[in-house]
Length: 431
Image (cartoon, rainbow, N blue to C red; front, top):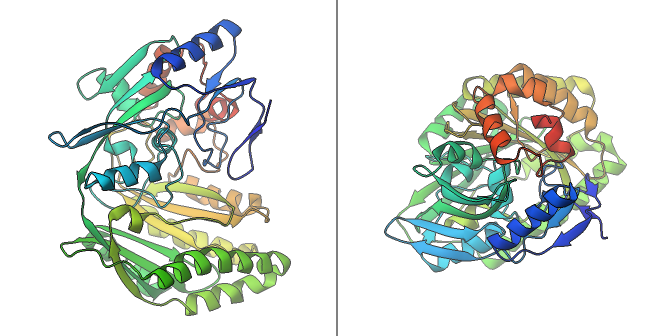
């Protein structure tokens, strides 16, 4: 049997068998088989999570045959797709129908089941996460039941399963709220630390979507504002798009990281030079071509959501710790904000949040960096992104989520025998 490995290379498992379900009935059969053989069953998607949240230990369900649109309802402004549909496929299909999601993250390689189950999110907007844009879902439970959940049918399941960590069942279809296609304009520009910190709340409040990237060991920051405009798209030219988003952001950045791996002492100077070379640019396009970008440099990532009101203080403390630690950090630190949502185990559940994301290239040991930063963010009431690296356990996560018991009660009902569990879920959710 071929081993399964996630994108980051940090988790490898050996599933007992691999099935390719093409329907909910096929998933039911796989669940029944898992029950009979006393094993587990998981549908891992593309494995883009940095954690082992989707790692299959028993029966693995490949998502390839559960892909594509099922229904487009322009009266209700909803679209239903099979759960194994990659986000980039969904986005292209929506564009062909002159529709778009409201908001999205910056990577589009995940399946929609994986992206929603781990809390993939963007920044700003009326809603930030993909999970908060779900209008309904279908899943197969651990007892083999095919269950539909939305705001009126099985609302208790809907309240938690929009971000279910893969612990409640195997998703087979998801219905998203969508909007008429719009043009999104991106404005990117360099700033210095003091001005960026002073103006961040203004940028976040006065733009539809705002974020910034701080280059550690420097005062250099790249700010980005995304706003809806009425004009037709004016995308970057083919050469400028290739130069900025392919060559500089991937090829050249990969080379810079290799140099930094060989000579860590050069990283502060490299970061400062990179920050000085930042230039202002403005372009517009359909939303998914502005929100998302290709990532070819393999890295490790940890991301935490802290209450919005303490986010900048947490970032400043992280800066002080990095400066004192002696650790050389080559990747920018990403800063985003999200409105509160009403999903039980969403990292933005019940509170406006600021997300701080930390990266380290795959050839560098990330553990000391992430451990030091994690201590700071835990002290600020942080909640870890479920699909990104963390060391948390169920015992210390439960106090961070007021609706923890609500999620666990639904889990006990839908998966009493823990058919959908694995090592990561046993750590963060308990047995």
